[in-house]
Amino acid sequence: MLRERTDLESVEMKFYSCSEGEMPYVNLWIRFAVICKVRVLTLHILEDDYLPLDDMPLVSLHLKTLDLYGLILQKSFLDFASCPALENLKMNDCKINGWKISSLSLKHLSITSCFCDPDSRLRISTPGLVSLKLDCFVGKTPFLENMPLLQTACVNLGKGCKDVCLNYNSGVFCGANKNGCGNCLSKNDGRSNSVLLGGMSSAKHLELISELGKFIFTRDLNCRPTFSKLKTLLLNEYWCEAPDLGPLACILQNSPVLEKLTLQLFSKGPDHKVEMKGRYSPMEGPSAISEHLNMVEVKCNVVDEKILKVLKLLSAFNIRFGFL
Image (cartoon, rainbow, N blue to C red; front, side, top):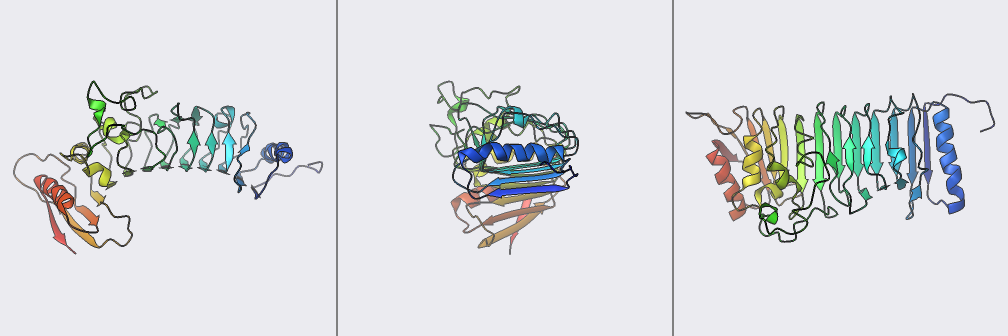
C-alpha cells in the first residue's frame, strides 16, 4: 500500500479463515482497491463466521461489478449512490443488517441464501434493474420497488421465508379473512400492498417458485398486477394448490401477451417422467387469456388427481394437450 498506486481492473480476495484482529485489514484492503479505481471486486469469506464490513458507503466512479460472500453488510454500505458505474451486484450467504439496497445504476442483482432481521422487510430500490435473482432468502420477503426496465426475474421463496400463513390449509390463506393469523394480516412495510409482483410487473420473463404455505405471491395477486410485457412464465405447484386454482388462473388472465407457460408440478427435474405440451386453440368469442400462448408445458412425475385438475382448468382456457 506504500507503493505508487496503479489502476486495477479486478481484485479478488478469498479467505478460508479470518480472525477478529485481521478484520480491520480486510476492510482497509477493500478501501484501497476502490482508491485504485478497481472495476471488478470479489470478496469471499469461506468460513462459518461472517465478516462484518465497515458501516461506510463505497465511493467509486469506476466500480462496475461487486461479488460478495459470507459478509455482514451494514446500512451505509448498501447505499450505492456514490457508485454511479455499478451494474452487477452478487450477494451470496450474506447477513444484511441494513433496511434498504439502493442503486440507480444497477442492472443485474443476485441475492442467494442471504438473511436479515426477521422483524423487518428489506427494501430493494433499483429502478434500472434488467435482471433479478432472489433465491432462498431467509427472513421476510424483500419489498421490490418499481423496476420498469426489468427483463428477467427468477424468484424462489424457500423454507427460510418467514411469510408463512399459520393457518394454511390446502392452498387457502387466512389473510383474506378478518380473523386471519398474525402473519397474513401483518403490514407489508412498503408503499403498496404488493411486495414482489408489483415491482416485477414490467418483466418479459418470470420464474416464480414458492414453497407451499408461503402467502406472498397469493396476497400480491389480490392487487391485480398486470404483466403487460410478459412473454415466458415458469411456475411450480404452489400456484396450483388452492382448491379453485385461483392463483394460476389469475396470473394467466393478467398476462395479455404471454407466449410460453411452463408448469413444473411436484417434480424437481430435470428428468421429469411425464411431459405434456399444448397450446392455445382459438375459439369463438373473446379469450380470457393471451391468444399468443403457443407453447404450454406441464412437467410432472405422475398424472394424478391434482394434475388432472390443472389440465381441466387449462382446457377451460382453450388449451389443448398431447402426451410426449
